[in-house]
Length: 187
Image (tube, rainbow, N blue to C red; front, side, top):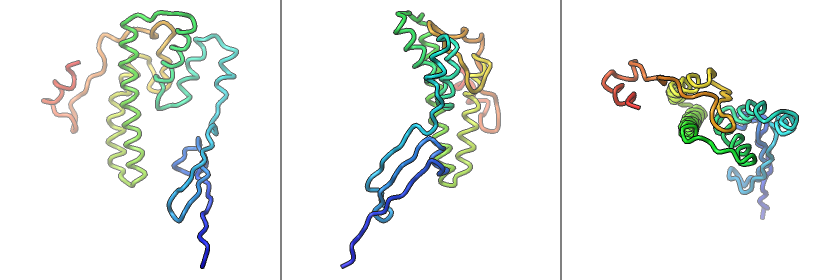
């Protein structure tokens, strides 16, 4: 009787789906993964070491770059740590603004996830639709910070500046009818 063997194979960090940040040593039984040994930290940027020699405010920009899809959430975690260490109270309005942008970031993440996974499955149209919707939300980032990526908007004790008088609104297009805009723009 022939003995059945499991095979070991590497997934990443060079695999297109791994994006260079993860290596998995997989034990395979045919096409079924029976064990996975993750090796993380392959995209270590030395952020902790860089932040050691800078004032707190000068390290906020590094937090944006830890995960370019979750920029403001990374900033939030960093400034909250500083606030907790220093015992700083954040004004309620700044808390609301932070929460709003954390939620915008969460939606941006989900759109990126849906779009990139659809693209991996060969659904290019879904990818393009997801990124079209992301653009509307990236306008909000740009309105408050002046940047669409790496916003550096959160600060210990609050945010860089208050919201603009008017946030970006949906505009009539082939995807958004005029009758829908009133509902979209009511906030």
